[in-house]
Amino acid sequence: MDTPIAIAPKNGAANATGEHVGSLSSGAVAPTPICVAEATLGRHLARRLVQAGVSDVFAVPGDFNLTLLDHLIDEPGLRVVGCCNELNAGYAADGYARSRGVGACAVTFTVGGLSVLNAIAGAYSENLPVICIVGGPNSNDYGTNRILHHTIGLPDFSQELRCFQTVTCYQAVVNNLEDAHELIDTAISTALKESKPVYISISCNLPAIPHPTFSREPVPFFLAPRVSNQMGLEAAVEATAEFLNKAVKPVMVGGPKLRVAKAKEAFVELADACGYAMAVMPSAKGFKLSKSADAYIFAGPIFNDYSSVGYSLLLKKEKAIIVQPDRVVIANGPAFGCILMKDFLKALAKRLKKNTTAFENYKRIFVPEGVPLECKPKEALRVNVLFKHIQNMLSGDTAVIAETGDSWFNCQKLKLPEGCGYEFQMQYGSIGWSVGATLGYAQAAKDKRVIACIGDGSFQVTAQDVSTMLRCEQNTIIFLINNGGYTIEVEIHDGPYNVIKNWNYTGLVDAIHNGEGKCWTAKVRCEEELKEVIGKATGEKKDCLCFIEVIVHKDDTSKELLEWGSRVSAANSRPPNPQ
Image (tube, rainbow, N blue to C red; front, side):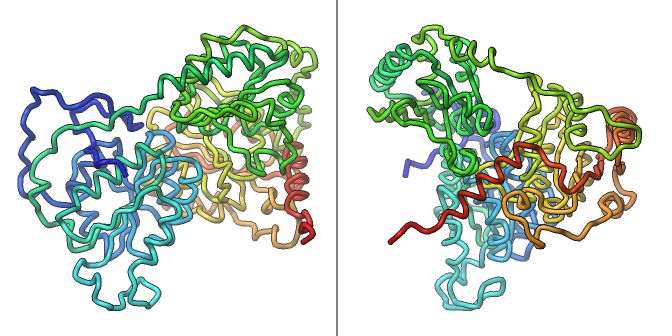
C-alpha cells in the first residue's frame, strides 16, 4: 500500500476526478487551526469528502450512524440526502460518481452494509470511486465476544468487512482515534487513485470526539499524478505504429475503461489523426465492422459475454492491439506495462499514417437507419416511435440514463449531441440501477436535465426514490416503458416468471408526490399523446419532475435485443464439456 496521502484542502488545486497536481512548496503557510467543535472525527471525514469533490452524501439512518450523520450535516458545502433504502443510496452514489468523479453513501452496520453491497459491487465493476461509509459498533465492543443487534447473532463483527473485501479496493475499520486520520485519508486517496469503491467503518461512539490529529488543516500534500514509464511508452508506440501502419483496413474501438483512464479526449484525438473507421463498445454493429478488418486497436475494452453478444465476437488475437488504462499488449506479444492510456494514445496519434480504407468501405455498404413507419391516428404507440421523439429532445444540456433491458439497445442507437451525457450499467447489469443512478447523476449535474428510460420491471425494484428526487427538487424526465414484464429476460428465456403485476405507475408517482414538490405525470398510448406530453415536459413543466408512462405492446422490442437475446441464451445453455 502506498504511503497515506492527504487530500488537498478546500483552497487547493484538487478536482473532482482526483487528479491532484503539485506538491508542498518550501514556503508553505502553517496549517490553519480548527476550533474544538470542528476538530472531531466526524467533521474530519466530512471535510475530506468536500475536499475530494463530494457535495452530497446519500444516506439511510440507523442507530450506529446517527451521530456521524450529525457531523456530516454540520459541514459547510456537504448535504446529506436521505434515501428510501440503502440499495438506492448506493446506486445514487454510483450515478453521482459518473458525473462528479467521486461519490459517497452512508449506512448503518451490517443490515445497512449488506443492503448497499450490491450497489457497491456494481460500482466496482464499472470502475467508479464510491466511498461507502458505515456506522460501526461501539469501539468498546470489539474483542468482547458480545452479540450485537443488526448482526447474524454471532460474536463476530467481521462479516460485513469480509463481504466488502471482495468489492472494494481498500477497507478501513476505524475503532480508535489514534490512527483514524491516517485510515480515512488512505481510504479516500486510494478510491481516487484506483477509481474503485472503498469501505470505511466508523465506530458509533467516535464521531463527536475531538483529537489533536483533527485540530489543524493538514499540510497540503496532493495525490501525485501518475506518469508513464517514458522508455516503455516510446517502445510501445514504436511497435504499435509499425504494426498498424502495415495494415490495409485498420479500425479502432473504444471501450468502457476510457473513463477510468481519463482518455476520452485522447481517443478522439487519435481517431481524428488516423482516419480509421471507429466504433464504440458495446455496439454490435461496430463489431461487424471490426470483423472485416485486418488490424484493430481496442482502447479500454471489457470482453464479457454481454458485450461480445454471447461470445459470438471471435476476434483473432494476432490482429489486435489491446490498450488498457496502464498496459498495452500488441497482438500475441510483446506487452508493455506502466504506460498510461492517455499518454499512449496521444503519442500514437503523431505516428500513425492516415488510413481511411476501412471507413470508405463502410460508407460504401452503409444503409442509413430507416425512419419508423408513420403512425395512423390513435394507433398504439411503438417503441421505435418513442425513441424517435426522445432523439429530438437531446442537446448538450441533457443527459441520458438507460436502464438494463431494451432501453440499452434503444438508447445505444441515439445520436448524442456534443456535451450530452450518457450512462448505463453494461458490465453489472443490475435491474433497478437507473432509479438511484438518475437521482445521483441529477444531483451532481445540476447543469443538465436528465432523461431516464426505465422498463416497468426494473422500476418496480427501486421505485421509492422518486420520492428523494422530489425532495431534491430535481426536474428529471422519466420515461416509464410499460410492456408488462421483464422483456430482456423474455428474449433470453421466456417463462411465467417474466410477467409482472401491472401497476398504475402514474398513480403511484402521484401518491409519492402527495402535493409536496413539483411533479407532473402523464400516461400515453399513441404518438399524438406523446407529442403533447413531450411539449409540456419541455415547456410549461420544464421545472417539474416529469414522469411519463408509455404503454406499449409486450412483444414490441428492438431487433438488436432479439438477436442479442438469442445469442446470450445460446451461450448460457451450452452443455457441460465432457469430463
